[in-house]
Image (cartoon, rainbow over all chains, first blue to last red; front, side):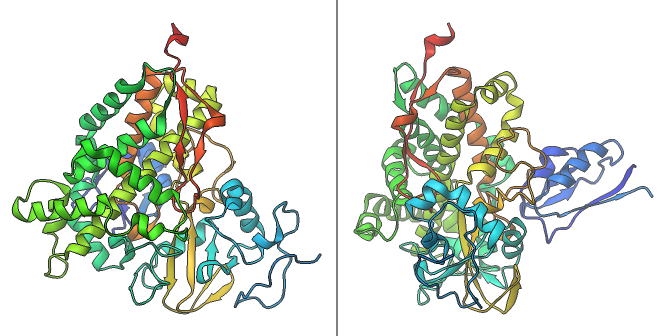
Length: 68
Length: 428
């Protein structure tokens, strides 16, 4: 199933940095050390990487939506 | 079954429960006398924590003024995420607060404060602690690692803790702060013993309190930065504004001590434990030599398995329920990262080291707003530090019988000394 949306819940993120390790083309960190989704990143091209980032996040701060 | 130990004053106990079934450990230790600084804990921590997870996941301890040990992964994460209910704050008029049980000689900066103040410190220091800063630091960390090995690798035997696993993080941390990295040994020796000894030991306060070389030197460096601010970590700390106020000199010293203690022996313990493991497990050593790209995931697994910081504590601020027990304001909770990281309900084969484990959501760096600020630097030091050893002395062996562990692993799960033989000729 294709991932159609990926988001970081800022309140939950505490900057562990795992998402940027597993999906560096999708996740980056802002000045507060919190993750954000890079604006022009492709969810379809980075599907498996996003799945790994989702699984690796210790704070369960990443939300993903898949095609129904 | 009878109880040989003292009667617990567990305020939450309704009736005695035999929590010792099948456990080889002495009853005294398990019935309300858990002591993280004891020899029993040092020698048997994994079985003790497993016993608790399976039989009594929130055990009461009468030691150090009384506390509960949080042993399940989900409970440790739950407490760590709720700063309002579970406070880190340490108020000097309330000695049984803060994140250390028993309390340290003085407050340890923003790790012993609550949001929003703790977050003001973190935001102010973030430029020292980003992934980008860690990446930019690679050249000097690599140089420190290579210089340290250059000094000793030709010897038949050397202490890899004193000369390498202590030296590398000490030099790195001092360099980040703008302190004199050439003085690494004086700093490293101080912090090494500061964390290796039990804080309640005779003379501890005299040995590590005000007046020692490290503290005096920190005050001098602060005076110097008042006159000559620089582009360094100490100057960043001094430029912080909490509310609108600059930190006091004492608060600056606290922050420095936090970063030094947090940066030194934690990283040293991780690297030393890993080198011991790879001495004993040549298959994994070979895999890492053949495929250094595995080092980052091995790093996470060693963090999980050996948890350099075994636990930190919180104080309850409201009534709440945890692991089926009711807690009230003032209750002390010790969060066992060591136990959370070995929780079989979270990790498959939790007692096995699997260097490419995925996912690996360990809590060795903690969880929530107080998560270790230095984790990127720590991972970078580890990756470079381990890779240099595996590249330059791939046939090293640890002199296992001559290793000396810390007196207590209750503050830091490390080693005082670990002699190694580089065996440079073995591969030729």
